Length: 274
Image (tube, rainbow, N blue to C red; front, side, top):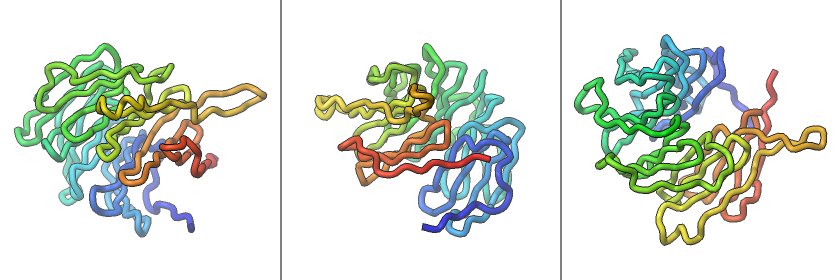
């Protein structure tokens, strides 16, 4: 397969998140250089370049014409690609680490280093959150599965029903020895996959019937140096909605596709950095 580069205004800083659009082949990229960029992945051209005042640590689509991003200044911003405008949805008291949007409820949800999970109802246009959950540690990652929010906090994964945020529906102690760095839930699998700071991943099922299988955990990103194992954090995970495969990416530019049944490596790509 031929390699294609994204032309135009390349990011001056490291990309913090990459997401494909809901229905098109547009690609959304947030970056530490404070830019949010929209690319046409079919032809590799830059369509939108929106600048902000803070480093952007995560982003997500609202629909094909708008998106959200969160930054190091604790702000949640909405970007309109057609008009070129941006407005502030809300604020956290510390750096924002992750953001998701639920099409089912019309809510934006964010996790922060202020140990809070917040929700904003876009229908009300109110900068005050419609819901706030105070946790006992930083929120490292969020994922949506139907009406449920999954939040990775230290080594735990908390489940919240967006219709009732009073208490978590469930709390699973993920079988990882170190804190979770990233999380991706799959309604199709009825499961989630999480990655830790020591290069391990875990697959856990969401309901008790399936959970008798308990899922599994294995170390997938160790690197060997001078005869010793060097553990590399798993920074991101993507789950295929149809095939039983998932992809992990680490701190050193290594991307691996895995067979979820056999835990066997399907393919590996290592990026070279200049």
